[in-house]
View 1: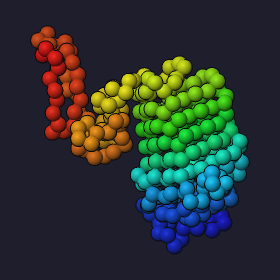
View 2: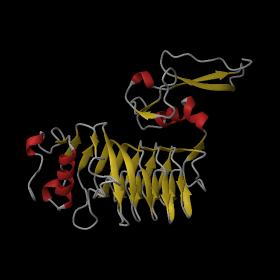
View 3: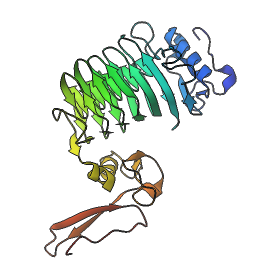
View 4: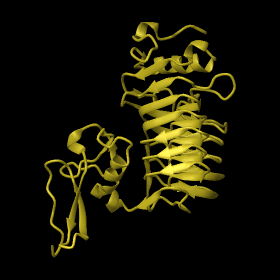
Length: 316
């Protein structure tokens, strides 16, 4: 098993049914070192976060310690499955000019069900979740990191080279000193689907709300119209009011391959969600209510949750 599995005493055996469990920063570091050493045992194994982890006590501006990403471009790409379990890794801090920066550096595997927050500064191919996604999958992930880099920079994946990004959102500011800057992917030659961005994006050229530059596909993606995008580059512009109304959450959910399986929702009354959230909570499911004229032409559309109320449109 390569350098030896560092998770033997933490629960799990590395299989899909019994993934290696990660609950502390020390275990996350051991997992990173295990992968980056080129351990043959890491290939095809399954890892799962079982608690939220705050990295800020060790990785911060004050400490001067910068996180080394999981997966390298030479002998040790991440080629396993990492399930965030719906937990958050907060306090991520990276400050370097190197390429392939993010929580994960270079991945050909699957990363899912994870929220990441903190501050990232890197070189080219820098992303909040993954710097370089070479044919892997990134799904059900959220980034609120401020992400800074050179070219091919974004909140989720810096360079999506043949991989797939699905059901992800970015709320962090993304800034590049070069070209190909996007909310979800800086450069895309793979697939980006059912995702949205509300973070600001800025760069020298090819700046998009969803992707900066794309030779791949971008479907059912939406970005806040004030994010600073300089072109469409895939995705549809939506206002803050359209996001708040539930419209975008409804679109994201109902464009799923299996729309009956809930992925997106949004609380629209009481303590409301300003933007769509990744959730299986059926009370947050968004329903579309269409008001029609006698000739069946649409008069107005509103959105609500189950058992919610809808205000009649003016002059119904």
